[in-house]
Amino acid sequence: MITCGIVGVTGYAGMELLKLISAHPRLQVTCVMSDSSAGLRLSDLYPWMETGALTLEPFKPEKLNQLDVLFLATPSGVSARYIEQLDAFEGVVVDLSGDLRLTGEVYATWYGKAPVHADTQAKAVYGLTEWNRESVRTARWISNPGCYATAVSLGLLPFLTDGLIEPDEVIVSACSGITGAGKALSTKTHHARSNENVQLYKIHTHQHIPEIEQTIHQMTGVEATVSLSTHLLPINRGIMATMHVVPTIDQTETEWIDLLSRAYRQEPFIRVQQGEPEIRTAVGSNYCDLWVYKDDRTGRLTIVSVIDNMQKGAAGQAIQNVNVRFGFNEALGLSTQPQYI
Ligand SMILES: NC(=O)c1ccc[n+]([C@@H]2O[C@H](COP(=O)([O-])OP(=O)(O)OC[C@H]3O[C@@H](n4cnc5c(N)ncnc54)[C@H](OP(=O)(O)O)[C@@H]3O)[C@@H](O)[C@H]2O)c1
Image (cartoon, rainbow, N blue to C red; front, side, top):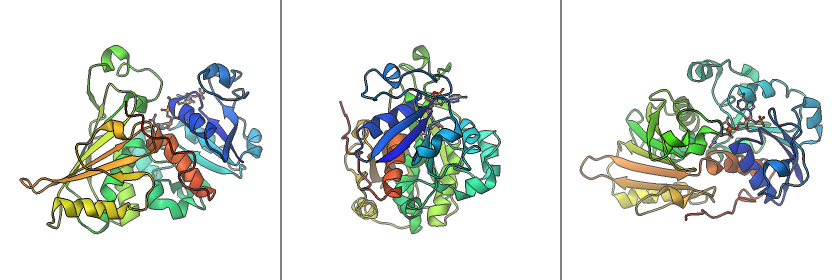
């Protein structure tokens, strides 16, 4: 068994990690750490889940020696504080925050916080599994991608790889369920305001914009400029990203669908779909569902990507990366089908 620790287990992503690992045949949570709730029994925190007899402990670097994997399910800036204390830890670190994703100057600009040490950031491998699994296989630091960044990058990359779309004409409208904002209440996420409402937020300033552009550059060599608008939906889970792009070649919609299907034909979690997209085809699972349509009138393509923000957008992809890192079947423990209804 691979022994795992989770920091931030009281949060949404930490809870999802716990749930997925409890059903995983080769992973076991042996240590749960919490800043706010040390001393609480896990079974009292999550009485609806079979969690075993663990008690939440304060983070102490010396307690990590027995662990093979440490998940940091903590906010950006908070993960950085833990990362600074992990030099002596010899296991694999999977950080779900943005703290290892961007180089220092870009991070400081978009997050407005001090970046982690440049050497540590440089060692981190970006865990967009389908596009970077060879690097994940040997990584010590895995930087788990952001939820919007995962949905958007998986949709765009096959088209950018061979210059099939204009890299400076990418316009993305994306929406997320409310769990994407984490469990802490804000005036935006209060039920009275978020229910029966759609809120556009972080206009032109969402921190996943540089992450997407950096990922496109890393994976394809293309310098792209992406316009991204992000909306909060009054649903618990799920992300839908609708991407409007300008193709550089003329081919039929069927040929575009074939291209996307070929790009992902061996991927267990990417499904190329037809028909009208809906968020529920992926929610509750680690799937990313993709659609592509040709608009014969405008000449543009519309690419749609749907994921569960807490699975493929966070904990599911983190487990997928750990499966790759430890040589397990990539889909191990991730076979839950979408809940749909
Ligand atoms: N929710 C998603 O859909 C999603 C998707 C992709 C990535 N992520 C990333 O995953 C990380 C965790 O997200 P989340 O949605 O699980 O957040 P969350 O629900 O707000 O939980 C974060 C946890 O971090 C711990 N924490 C420690 N110091 C904190 C501080 N100063 N402020 C707030 N929390 C603090 C808390 O646990 P203790 O008090 O028990 O330590 C808290 O429960 C974030 O970096 C987020 O960006 C989330």
